[in-house]
Image (cartoon, rainbow, N blue to C red; front, side):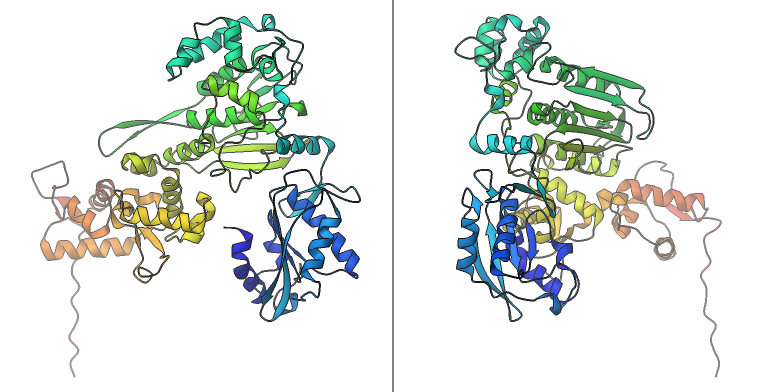
Length: 580
């Protein structure tokens, strides 16, 4: 959901006094008021427009105060839309084209200024270069300006030549390259593994016409690459997140060896929890799914900015694993669109080489895979953040701890198409936390627009999986409210936070059933409480443990075992007749 499409709702929140404008501002929305003069107003808006253009674009709303709530926050504006558009164009370098329009809210005249994501790096005529960072406009360092300029112009720093030649390639790194090529699914690349070193380097596109290695080739395959920091990767293991590191590894180039050894080091300390499915299959659930960790580390090494001369850092404990890389996300990608923005390399030359080796995802599915594998393992989704720590950086955080086995079993039993669908798994995870979901709520989570999200919800309510159903009161609406179907609720059981029953309610229903029919079994408990076989078993065990029920059938195992009144079965109370 964008700030533009959601603007009427946001303005209504301010008008009703529910929220202040400042609390609604974010990466792509800012509220402004007129200054003392037209000149000052235009300068202020030009600076804000530059800030948005150097990030991912955004919306300026003129005529609403930052602080305060209610109708008093709407002070309106008398500025002319065409004049503001012209002045922003004149006050920015290169000239920035914006879309300025009038907007009426409860009789108040406002202006909306839609700022596109820039194709260049923008500044004001006074030389101010800023970039939107959450709800602030922060000055850009020269290194930030250079990086953004390269990305927007398509300049690839790693494609530049070095003074290294193919003879400088590390022999162990080339051996690793050949092994990687042999393991790829593509027959052409497998045959390439038997080619000469020079032919392989040309196939990886890391050699220039003059026979020199590019920065990508040097970083990937040579020791002591000048193009990268002395340490490109640092790993620390801590028994607890705040404890002392008990294992530390540091790697320099070649990158291809550092990556492989780091994955092995993480795997050696990655615990496994066995989980049995209803079909009898045993799943080996890792503390941190190796596929997810591999993708996070590959992304950090491919997209991290080597010009920062800082290493990728991995911090590992049983509870938390983080992968931090130097530099922000690639221009145009944010934590809010990272699932659906597609693959966009900061350094195309380096990314192409790693893709050829099978170490990088070529279709923009790497981040998708991280989210999907974490949900499959019964854990929360990864957290992706941009932060300022000794310069801009990107951090991916995985939460460990015991897996939620119910979610793991449930997903393992889904049809293949849904089990491999990230949208499906994220919506299931949402509905383990909240009772219902709408397209507008789910849109932010699966990072799609509302119409596409509604299509996903409808598919899950009518497709092969039949996971969802519209609530009774909204079924006829164009965009209903959805909830999990009874079967899904039963399978997920305690994984669904709101799926709890009061002990008194369970006692009453079980006792009433036994009084009426004499016995009860597992299958009956499943039907009465809408639970699966395991939850029904636990309910019956509790009653047997309290001697409210005892086994009364000769059969000792299975859902058909019958239970009847035990020594502590409550006697039926009779009402005393009141005489007149």
